[in-house]
Image 1 (tube, rainbow, N blue to C red):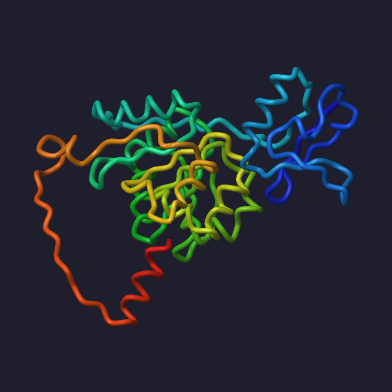
Image 2 (image 1 turned 30 degrees about the vertical axis):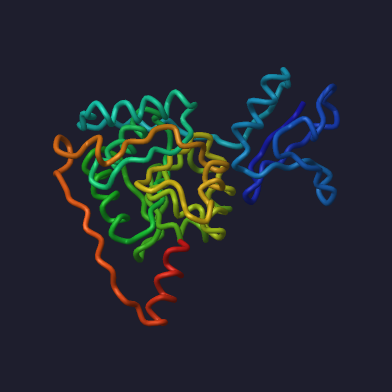
Length: 270
């Protein structure tokens, strides 16, 4: 029998050699590991790996994710455009990125995604301000403990909020703890170091939230591979005047010193 287990950011596959009609080359992301005499795949390929095995009728003993149900309910009622975004994400197999303007309620969509799936979830954010904001929202909406990684805390619960930095440091340790990963400001995953967060987690359900999906350096293509494609986009003009305040765009040019330019370019990379 083929056996699957999570190990240090990978899916360890045993018994594949004894499975007729299936080789490592037939399965997504799987390679032979001569050191352990097994096969392995990056953890983020777990959903695709299971689908491929099921399609071939392979009987599996799967211990990758042994997760409790998360019984949560939110009082939020989604607006039509928010519900459309959530529906498109669910229709894409609970994977993919939603692009909506700042102030359009992306956090609320994320909360409703957590409610809909009812599985342990990790929310990853780039700043301490967003860490605190998400934790407040989750504690207000859900009657369940909320863990926090970052901002001076390192506590893991079935519902946990983490900074990108803390998730990066603990990804291989926590990669089998969550069925859903929510990446707020998902364009940050385009940075080479942060990509390992998504690579090392086995969570089959993945939601990216951002106001600016495409990056000038093309790194959004890496996000597509790790989280899923852009499945829904709402432009600012679609909501201005009804759901968002009317606005004017004014371009103001400023001169930067060499040091300021260096800092600006460095921060743009993340």
